Image 1 (tube, rainbow, N blue to C red):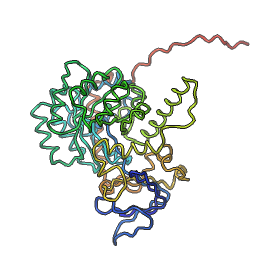
Image 2 (tube, rainbow, N blue to C red):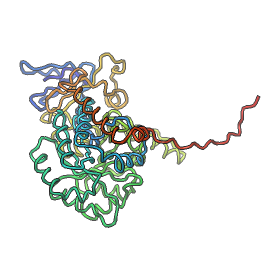
Image 3 (cartoon, protein in one colour):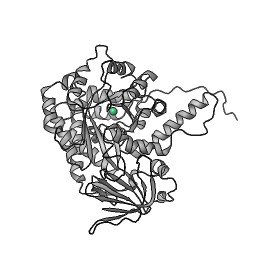
Image 4 (cartoon, rainbow, N blue to C red):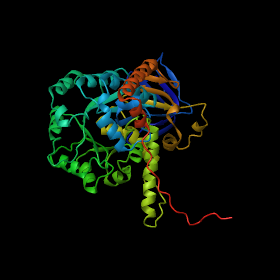
Length: 461
Ligand SMILES: [Zn+2]
C-alpha cells in the first residue's frame, strides 16, 4: 500500500517532517518513506495530497466498559462518578454490558485514529466479565492492552484468586491482545493491603497502572508506600498524578515510570490541575488519555488541544501571580503530538514497534485529510494543525498493522448496527434495574445554590 504525496510527521527520534512524501507499507510494516517511491505491482495507492500522515495515536487510559453510558455524566463531579459506579450502579453491569461498552469504545478508537488503546477495565466483577471485555477487544481490528481491575473488590482479593490467574493463562498468555496491565489504586492505608496485588504483578511480570494523585482519593502516601515496598517499576503508569508533591514526582521520575494525563478529565471531574506543567519540570515522561466516555469521548485531538491549553493557562497564571509576563510558551504543539503517539508507545514499552513512522515499525498510521473542509488548508505548521485545527471528523484513513480499518472517512467492515443493538440492550437493562427516577437523577445532579453578590453600582433612572 502506498500513501502518495502527504505531509508526513514521522515522530522519529529527530521528529523529521517531510513534505510531499510517500509512505510505503508492505505487509504489516512501514517499508519506506520518501519522495516519489515506487511500489510493487498491484499495490493499493492512497492519495494523501493535502493531508497529514502521522503515526496512529495511543490512549493509555480509557475505561472502555463505560462507553455505552456515553455522555450520561456530562455534569458530574468525581464524587458523583464514584457514587454512581463504585457504590451504586457499577455492580449492575453484566458481562454483556462490558462487551457492549468495549465494542463501542473500540470502534470509536479506530474511527478517531487511535490505533492503540489501554482498556482500563475496572468493572471486571467476575472472570466472565473479563472474558466479555477481551471478546469485544478481539472483535475490533485495533491494538488493545487490557488493564485488568475490579472496583467491587480489593485488589488483594481479585488479584490473588485462582480465577484471575487461570484467566491470565487462558486469555492473555499467548492471546491476541497487544498487552496486559494490572489496574488498581493505592489508598494510602498504612497497612498497605495493595501489596499482595503488586506481588502478583511482579510474579506475572506485568506493569501496574494506578490512579495516583487524585484529589480526595489517592495522594503522596500511596506513592511512598509503593516506593518503600519496591513496587515503583519502569513500565508503571501513574494516571492523572495531579495532586502530588515534588517528592512524589521525584520518585516517579527516579523509578522510570510515566504519567498518563487526562486533561479534560482532570479539568472537569476534579482530580487536580492537569499536571504537565509539573511533569515537564521533573522530566517525567507523559502520555495522553481520555479516561471515560461517560463524560468525554475517545478523541485524542481533544486531549492534545486541552493539554496544550491547560499547560499554557497555568504558565500564564503562575507568572501573573508574580507580576510577570510569559513571552515564550514552554509547551509546544510538537510536544503534545509526541505525547499522543510516541509518548504512549514508550509508556507501554512498545516503542520499538509502534508510535512512529520509521521503516521496520508496525504500520499503524493515520491520514488526516478532508478535501471538503476549509480547515484543511493552508497547512503551514504541521504540529499546530494537528493539535489545534484538525478533528476526528478529518480522519480519512486509518491503518493498523498494515490493515486498512478506516478508508475514505468510513470504518471498514464495522458492524455498527450490532454495536448499537448491544448498547441499547445494555442501557435498557441498566435503566430498568435502576428505575426511572434514579436513572434521571443520576444524569441530572442537583445544581448547588449560587451565592449572589450585592452589587453597589445599581442602575438608576
Ligand atoms: Zn480513570
